[in-house]
Image (cartoon, rainbow, N blue to C red):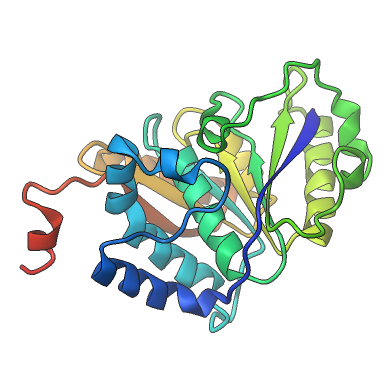
Length: 258
């Protein structure tokens, strides 16, 4: 695998402020500020609607997992959709932005969804087309990028060289993850869908837990149950779920008053 870093942005707060910020955002009709380049562009059109619909779910997840009041704060968290099309990469990017804005230390977002480039489209960065060098996993993280000094959110792109699911490749990925733990306060990993690929189950065993992304009005109960069974069989700790792409039959401001 080869590894490439992109520094996304800088911001500092405490995680316990997140819920208050969320409430203020609702009152003001605004959203949490999105860090990174071209913020205004990403807030337009359909993407703005999706931000509105998933905002509360995402903020509650961040508050529950990373609040200083929590007794068991995970450092490495996998996010994976139950099925393709759940919007996992988008949710993962939003969670990373919010966490980076509200925790001390740097946050690393690992793009381990080798079947999609959604993360890079979100941050408007391009994946390298250079031939991957899996041996880079054997060297320290700083070989592929400078250690985080001022930046809060970093994007690490891992590109597999052939079949990465071999024991040797998994061991090297685990070694890479141990290096990341030394340099970053929180590590979020965007993984492929649980029911489609084995990647999420394999990566989940190296992490502190996994969050399932469920597509509202689309993911069937049976599919979600099957995903949970796959994770349980692999010994992966499920930290929770996010309901994404929720729609309202009536305007949301009226829905909230019911």
